Amino acid sequence: MPRTTLTLPSPSPGTQRTLTVYRYGRPGARPKAYFQAALHADEFPALLVAQHLLRLLEAAEEAGTIDGEIVVVPVANPIGLGQHLHGHLLGRFDFEIGCNFNRQFPQLPSSAMLDRLLGRLSKDQQVNVARIRQIMLQTLAEQPRVRETDALKATLLSLSIDADLVFDLHCDSESLLHLYASRHHHEQAVILGAELGASPVLLEEQPGGATFDEANAGPWWRLREQLPGAETLPLACFSTTVEYRGQADVRDDYAEQDAARLYRYLQRCGVVAGDPGPLPELRCAPTPLEGVDVLVAPAAGLVVYRKALGDAVRRGEVVAELVDVLAPDPRAARQPIHSRTDGILFARMLEKLARPGQQLCKIAGAEPLPHRQLGQLLGD
Ligand SMILES: [Zn+2]
Image 1 (cartoon, rainbow, N blue to C red):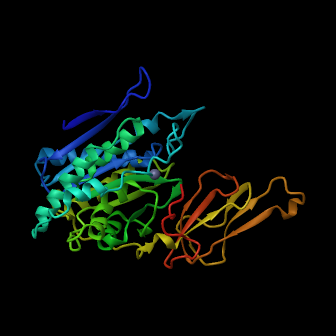
Image 2 (image 1 turned 180 degrees about the vertical axis):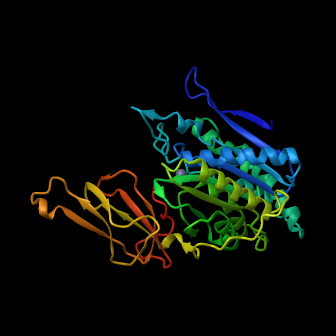
Image 3 (image 1 turned 120 degrees about the vertical axis):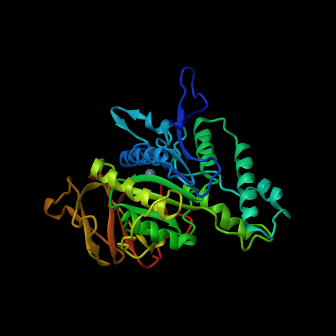
């Protein structure tokens, strides 16, 4: 079995966590695809999809049909998975410093990396891509890895940074299967979205937060902007975050189908041999991340939804009501929550008691919204 174990620094005497990595195909073969699941730890649908994918890849390896290289980290966040508090698993934020596990990844190129590349690009773009990947790996190897979480992030990125395709598998609170990708990769996102049956397909521009998907794809367009002579460099990594529905959607029938769809996408990209069949129709046109209306609770209260996941809503329509259970006049206890865009309701909060400012739901619209700010599109 092509399985290796990497050790993270011990956070306290007597405690040590590990990352388990599965590798398929010949090391160095292209295209290279990288998968990781549940960076926010308590994202069980993603864990199950990765497990089904491993079964398919084992069979492909036995059959000798893997043409590229595939690396899978089926449990991307063993730190978060250990964060139990009074019977609840809280995996989104690092208990130690409060940081979201999918934020503040090292964003290349660093100035040291730019220095290493200055004047070293050739006319052969394939040679340039290989050289840049090698320098990115070298630069990441120099990242500080003292704290356990820093070591986790640097290790994950070191496994993925030289890949052609990067899949970060997550889930939302309660949602449709949807995905995020950079607007630079519009075409790839459309094909992947169609293959996976995703809705919506959200295209990002300056999402902010230094997420894992941007840490992989971003160096290529930033090099174009920052390195003299790199203006025509290929964008050599397509990276995406796939949200496998909601936290409660842990089902074998879903996960088996989802893994088969990822596998067909690998066939379509030439990572695995075989005919993926015709591409399914895309369920929706891609929409901009700055067109997502994130509705928040204006006060504390119980949330009662008036719209279901997948419903088309109009601007001004009531999506939910917030119920003040201690209203002085119980007949006036309900506050309507209105959509500020035309779009599809694709994610809702699973908990039903909101605190003021808490995110309630998300609606994907086609038009950028004035209240959405580039660089701050993801919240926390
Ligand atoms: Zn997540």
